[in-house]
Image: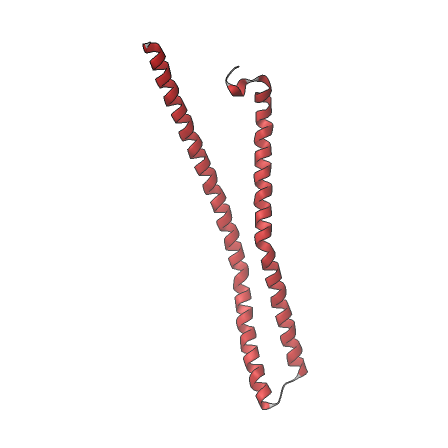
Length: 135
């Protein structure tokens, strides 16, 4: 009876330690994933800074164009230049809209590859039954 209780207590301690190790491992993986997301967010922010500068420049150009219109001295070359800058900013915005989708797709591919690798590593253990503790 005491041996059974002692074995049961050992099994409980072992299960607790295994769960603790699993939680620590999952926490570590979560922190690694969070660092990856932070790095991607920093890259997106870096791409937004030049866009902010371009928009500020466009605002000043539009203000100058507005004052030129009041004077009646608007040139078509100036309008063409402004249109080109607006098109450039729109292209940059379109690229930025695809960034979150690319980040999510990349994370999904990495997660799927890691899961597939774990399944492949575990497959031989499942065949001979050693993963279930019967071996």
